[in-house]
Image (cartoon, rainbow, N blue to C red):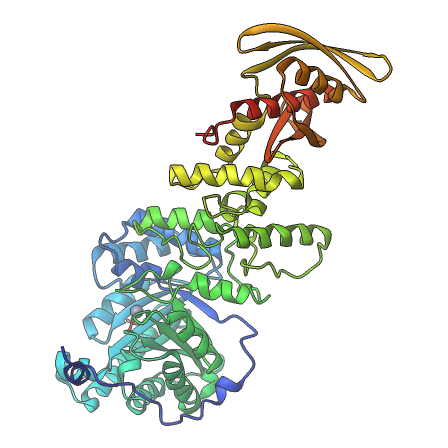
Length: 563
Ligand code: KIV
Ligand code: ZN
């Protein structure tokens, strides 16, 4: 397609609101959360290849209540049996908490409205949500209706709803919502006339407000253009105090969250959306992202996502929709740091936070604290592969296994881990990092095994040792300024090897079976450096085991020995 053909095909079709001063954009960012309305059980459900069963819808409803939703669109009861039965079940079995309002969708047709009112009979708090498509494409191509006919249809629907409400057993239990479907692709002046005409039928007041919901049924423009349409209706619709202005962004251009946030700045009070943004095509606005964007600014969203991993699992099993690994806040990888510099910064920031516990959350690469949402630093944040750095690798051993590798050993061990990961072409779990540590460095006994060591004070310390070397048992003795030094001198002489014992450190380690000592020994032989680690309940034995492990690594000598 040529450029000309392409622009002839699409062109710019934004529905720009008459007032384009965008004063709302100059205001302070958001300081309080909106009224949330989940449309998972209607808009989300209608987008599933296999819609949820009655049992699954009931479970999902319970989840939404637990998360704190106070307004929940439960379906389109006149559309099919499952939707109708679900609505009846919630009401008849008294499953709707007193502080939760359920919402039902209806078209502006008499028999559908009638069936809808039949479905909600007996509900304590309910919103009847009437919608009429108003967009240019709908009017011209789908319904072949003029603006006047479209407006008349909406008003007709509003009147039938009002009559049905007055005829119901508890008119005060029923509130109304109106949506001009395709609002963002409707001429703003016309959308305003339709919404105003419907409100004029319903006579909203502050005490009995009407919800005017403005859907970006298809996201066709930039977020600020949509928000400006919202701002226009906010300014013009009357009576302002009787109108709860709601937005319902879809995500076709990937900007639904921004559209919702801008709309709230532009005067909207309420947002309709779904968990994880499930919905038609690219989905509805993701209420989890929106809510946690508030949370990350210190504003409690009035929704509880402290067990987000569980929510994710339940959502996946009920809807059959997998959650993308990079889905904000919820994806499996969204807290993961593989890269060395990121891991290093995070590990240092964690240490800083430990020393400064009241410091505000300001961790590099982690805009929020994963533990607030039931995620774990150990398994979710520092993830080890061939790109990882020493900070992260050492952090894993420290945080999960209590090992404090000496600083001089960090690079040595991280290179070992990176080589493993590179050759295996895979991420390593922390248990694998630990297994490599144990297998490569701890209490090594081949080709040299220490069988026994006895010490006595004799112008310094004298060690008498019995050991096996390449299967052959031998004895040796040596003198040194300490026990480790004495054993080292005995072995140097017996095995005819030379090295310098460069570093020795130790610390206590509590494991499942009781306290142990862990020792780290660094040996230098020319340009070569090898480390060994000893683990034993006795501190001296652990230090000697560390020495023997390091000697074994020197003796193994092959650069590729750890594969
Ligand atoms: O996206 C939409 O326009 C809708 C309406 C029915 C509110 O879901
Ligand atoms: Zn929708």
